[in-house]
Image 1 (spheres, rainbow, N blue to C red):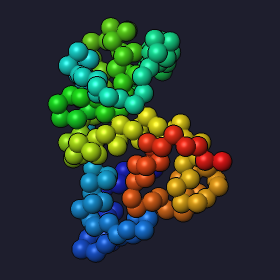
Image 2: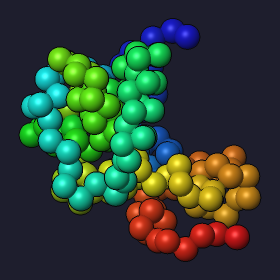
Image 3: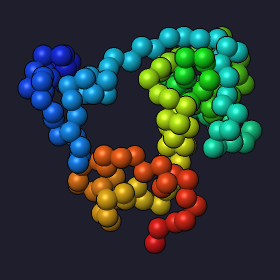
Length: 164
């Protein structure tokens, strides 16, 4: 697949483009597809979020460590600007268990505190939901073949109710 550049977005300049039920401006699209910079950080410089939704057992951490040994550290840890983990608490614990001197990290700075909490919940809970059927489809994907919802359903992440 060819690498996309800003030129690919020329049709969006100066006018909204459709994204689900909402219109996205060129600037919003650029933020959604902004390049990700991966840096390598000492795990001791990172802080686990104190109220992370998922707590990993020692067995799970050992399994994650075995996965890192087998496949490499493929998925970076996501942190905020201060080094607080937003996604990847289990990978951080596994890296510490393995004694890794550095881990791949993606630092993000565009989320406010409420968005950081929602992102942590989404990262931990979406896979646990019986279906991610936010638009009434029974296909088990987000909205089935429809576009993704324009408003992220945080309530779906915090509810303990299971759908039939």
